Amino acid sequence: MVTLQSAENALKNVYLGVITNQLNVAANPLLSMIKHSTNNIYGKEIRKAAPVGINGGICAGDEDGKLPEAYSTQYVQFIAELKNLYGKLEISDKALRATSNNITSFVNLLNDEMERLIEASNFNLGRMLYGKGNGELAYVETYNETDGYVQLNTVNNVVEGMAVKISSVSTGNVLDSTPYYIITYVDRKNERIYTDVQDYQANSVGAGSKVYVQKSKNKEITGIDGIFSNSTLYGLSKAEHKWLNPYSTPNGTTEYLSDNLIQTVIDELEEVANSKINLISTTKSVKRLYQEYLAAYRRNIDITELAGGYKTMTYNGIPVIGEKFVPENTMYLLNTNDFTMYEMCDWKWLEDESGRILKQNPGYPTYSATLVKYAELLCERPNGQARISNIAKTLTPPEDSTSGSDS
Image (cartoon, rainbow, N blue to C red; front, top):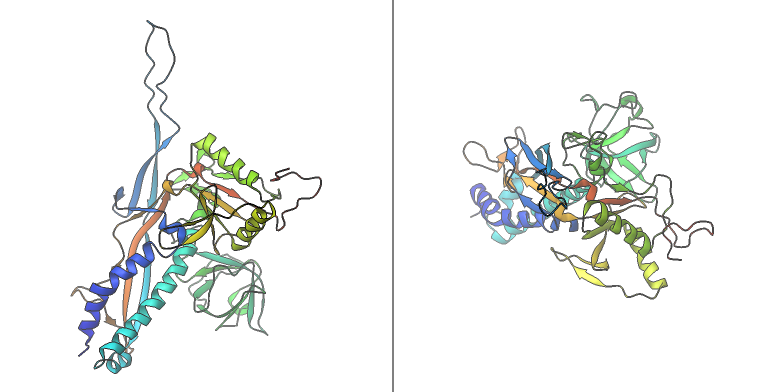
C-alpha cells in the first residue's frame, strides 16, 4: 500500500538522483559545460583569489648581471554571496489516496510531478544563466486594461504559469502591497502577456515598469548578461578594475555575420586575455543566419554532440548553440573553462526537524516538497569572454560598409 512515507522514500531515494542529473547536465547546453565546485566557500560567501595579468619576475639580463626582481602575480579577491535556489512540487491528499492501492498509478503521479518540476526548473535555470542576476524578465512598454494585456519589450524570459511582480513606474520598486501576477497566456508574436490581474493602473504599472520573478529581485545567480552589463562584479568596480570588462563590439555599429567577424573576436580574446573560446551562444535566428551564410559559401555544416545529448553545428570545431535567452541580434563567445558553479551542496530536499520532506500546507489538503541549492556562478576571467551585438538580420551589408565582411 502506498503511504505518505513511501512517497517520501521515493522522492529521496529514487527521484533525487534523476532530478540532480537533469538540472546539472541536461538543463542547458551552457550549464552542461560548466564545472561545479564546493571549494572557496566561507560561510554564505564565495571568496576566490583571481590573478591579474602575469608574473612580473622575468627579464633578459647580462651574463654576470643582477638577476630579475621578484614581482609575483597580482591577485584580487572575488567575493560573491551564495544565492538560494528553490523548486517546489505539490501533491494533493486526494491524489495520494486515489493511488494508494495502485503502485503503477502512484508512480505515474510522481513521474508527472517530477517532469513538471524539472521543466520549470530547467526554464528558470537557463534564464538565470543568461541574466543579470537581478531577476528582471522584461520591461513594460504599454498596457491595455480593456483587453487585459501588458506589452513587453521581450517575452523570451516569460512563460505561462509564471508568478511575477511588476515594479511601480514612479519609484521602480516592487511593493509588497502590489499583487502577484500569474501569467495566463504569452502572445509571442506580439510580445504581450495576459495575467489573472488586470488592474494595472491602480498598481502603478506603466511604461518603464519592470517585470520580475516572484521574490527574486536581486537574488538570482550572476549570469552572462551580468558579466557584461553590471557596473560592479563580485564586489569590485569595473571602472576601477578595467580588466574586468569583457570584450564587446562598439555600440551602435551594425555587424554583418561572417567567419571573419567571428574569427576577429576570437583572435582578440586570445591576444588580450589568452582565452580559448570553446562555446558560441546566440539566438536561434542568428544561428539560422549563420547556416545560411555557410550554404551561400558552399561550406559543410559540421555537427558535434555536447554533454546531455545536445547536437549542434560548429564554427572551426567550436559548438554554436541557439539559445532563446540570449538577447536578440546578439552572439556570446565564451570560454566555459573560466566559469564555475560554486555550491554549498548539490540539490537536496528541504527537511524539517524530524527529517520529513513532504509536509502538509497549513489550511490545505495538499502536501509539498521543496528542492534547494545554495550556489552562485562565477567567471574567473571576465575579459576572456566576448559579446557581438547589433548583428544584422541579413548577410549582405550596404555597399559603403565592410563590417564583418569577407570581401
